[in-house]
Length: 424
Image: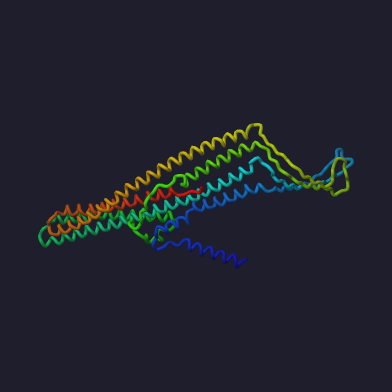
């Protein structure tokens, strides 16, 4: 026993250490895996699915016989106490086996409700998992985006220093004055706030990622990949009825219909068979008239019927009918909103897809323009202001291109979440 306890503790320690490991280079797949492993909502919905399976088993168990037993010890007195001084002790018990034969659909409706409850919980598990994956991807993409913006800011500062070096090359030709030198220094200094802001944005994104994954910030050392390494998928429309949110609404409607049917069948009686055994004994040999001291057994059929005179069952049936009506309205709303959202997401994505190429061209043109401007500045063909404007245009175009890529990935994750298939 002690050895088993030690092995269990060691296993828990090893599992905890493996669970706590974070890869040195954190990829998108790593983020999704860690998020699903560590998110409490995912574990809760899995437990809820197990509970739904137990509820289904419990509903089916009512098809089997029920065994009831009781025992009692009582004192019987005859008043006035003349014939039986001190009373008579009677020990009795009863064992009854009852088997439902026909419930007019009540048991069948209960089993159907439990099945639908299990399907609804299974869809909730899928929806929760999809939400976690969506959030994990978006937080990861945001961190990758801020990492790329930080790289752009570093390149912008490097370009500003390159411009400053080019200004130094013009000194030998006597083509600069003190004012040009001050302007160049000011331009280099103006790049540093962008770098500081980008650094702060990247650190904040890493903190958000560490909080979501429930890990220490120090454990996230590097992100594996850049924004351009994240592939974009072709977004297409899919049948709305297959979506997990729509399936959840459809199953809720079926559940409401089953509950309404149960409320209707609750007006009907229950037919069951029973067998019982009733032993009765007394420690004394005294026998009293009208008191049977013997073992008895009984078998037979029983018809139970219950009708509250206050109308409780009628109110229950009307309430379930309203639930069914509300469930149908919910199905209509979810179908309409899901269809509209799918079309909107694809339309927005296609717009960004068309915009992506033009932004990429703008970056390429701005990059060539900056190189030409730098060469022209060295030989004195353009002014410092023109060179700085050329470099700032390149930086802004790079950031706009990165923002476009990020928006595309966010829309892709939103559509993936929406199009998650549910359990039919």
